[in-house]
Image (tube, rainbow, N blue to C red; front, side, top):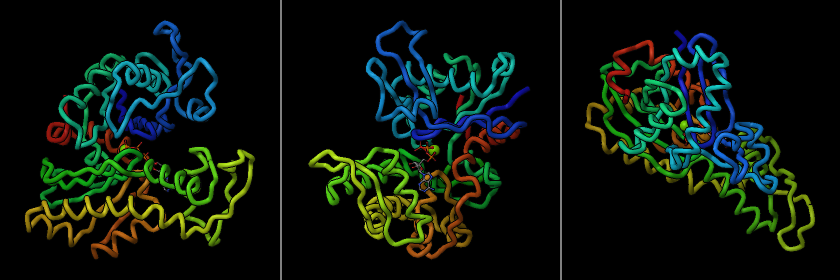
Length: 331
Ligand SMILES: Nc1ncnc2c1ncn2[C@@H]1O[C@H](COP(=O)(O)OP(=O)(O)OP(=O)(O)O)[C@@H](O)[C@H]1O
Ligand SMILES: [Mg+2]
């Protein structure tokens, strides 16, 4: 029987087939035709839809099915999930008989978990299980969440940053901060417009944010449109300025992590201080971020080998451990 792990994220959706590996990894976006009957509405999902963000033709709308990691509109989520699973499991029998675990933020409310499972059920994924995303991510990185030793993980995604400590089948503390990677992109966009009078697209702002981690030059040339005249132009931006723009957001994540450490009982804190923490989620790759945490807290900070896919991989792997599903899953 096929086993799928699904990470339905604010920014990206990843599907892992236990035997074939990653079978879908694309932006969480769908493109719909306005007003038409329900069935004919969906035009594209994933990369095809996201490439049209910012240049959507009249009569169509590009939507993100999730906000801050949770479903806000059941109808959109159901349509999106159905299309994702059709792409990931091409044969109908693979879908009907599959066992499926979907990641859910540990900060999600009962209602939000219920909405996710309802959308999955209506999308044809009968009997899907929801599993805590931080646990799935940890399992995807080889951590055993049934161990007595306490582990702490930080998932820095698009919509939220979540800090979770767990051991022996239970969550000890979980805090989330509703600013993460996407907020960093918005901060870069605003900074360029306000301080360099340059208007850029979302993709350009995101690329610039990501370049901070790899750039060897001290300045970068950014294409955009002049905010006053509207003419296309190039601006030279010092990398140090972008690093500074990202700081208030990384500060919020540092504060959330500090508060989570304060939540821990002393013995649990001792495990974390000795072993350090594990980071995953796309924005954990932000230039200088892990080093900043190491400096602030003094314990080892490890970034996952596959920070963008470990939640889906771990969710699929969890299905092989009934104990983990029983302890950290939701039906
Ligand atoms: N190399 C990188 N450096 C910095 N940021 C990155 C990098 N790669 C991806 N990101 C950012 O990571 C974010 C997406 O991460 P991820 O796919 O883990 O989020 P998600 O799971 O969809 O969101 P959430 O968990 O909040 O629902 C985006 O904001 C993206 O810009
Ligand atoms: Mg995520």
